[in-house]
Image 1 (tube, one colour):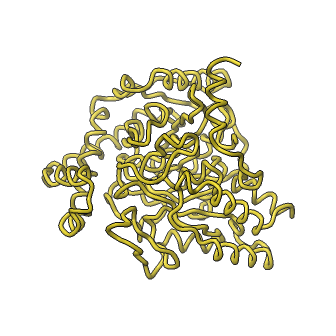
Image 2 (cartoon, one colour):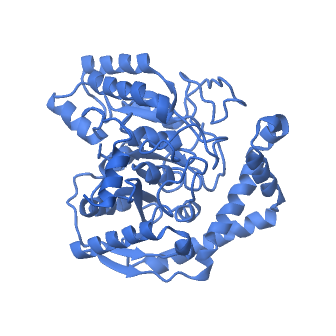
Length: 449
């Protein structure tokens, strides 16, 4: 065993094994239920047992509705499966309103025991599709880029990122097969990459962003965190009722992949970038056609434009919190809000115009490609005092392109590294199809116990 294998084994030994049932993806569990080898009660019980065992350390859940979930599971078993997701356990980010559970928005000191009176539309849709809601997943401090209570399940000293931190940690640690997260900059993909899950950010407004803590209207998106591209595809099929989200379509290896090595490449961990290049070589060997993209200088400014838009909007969305609860706000939050207050309407308009220009240019630059590939993060998850960087992710939030991170690799320390794939606006089904093709070639470490 070489040193990297010893490091990987040491990292894997840091968490106890999950039961076989707890490790099932949604699609795997559904197939077992169809065969009669799995009951909804057994699946929910396996997830709740994992939560009981691991949540004191991972802190991925702030509310667990165990009895309600078990009762729904019993009803499903009595009545039989009638809807797409009958029997499938689900977590919800605690910025999403739930009428039967508290929603403290990542700010329990400011919104203690906050109880909405109605479900957010995404929750209504989830219940209508048959999901069994297990509870609410922890959110980063103030629901922004600050460290929160959750920890990385692969190494409790490491961050699960922000702000859908608990959602990714819960999925990656086999506490639930799927959780609903949200993203404004990198809050679905970055936690998924650090924790070793599949995180999918759809095109803006593919799923209604209503009844959810708002950050920035041009950026906020709802999407699934799960453990396979198949599950992300099923999720989108259910929530959009679009038959193009097809998990049965035969896969191809002839994928046209464009690689964009941005200005942030030099800030990334060389070892992680070497793993990314190895993945590209593996794709090429399998039959994918790899080409290098040369992007205009305007695209390199998109990170700055995203910062302007997010800070401007957040300063206005959080204005009442700053006014009424400044003593309960972290200094970093207050500084960020004050930065947002310095941006004028003209600054905001210019950033939006730059994003529009890039959206138009993107189609000309990438018209001959199926997807763009980039690393998901600058490297493995840092220590819990930081939530890491979204440098490779946030541009796609601004441009509204659907994007997904795949847990294809591990670092020398055995920590997850994500492989990001980006598609075209409103072509989410097409992106997920090619993501399945890439996953088939590169593999998926999310099920590794």
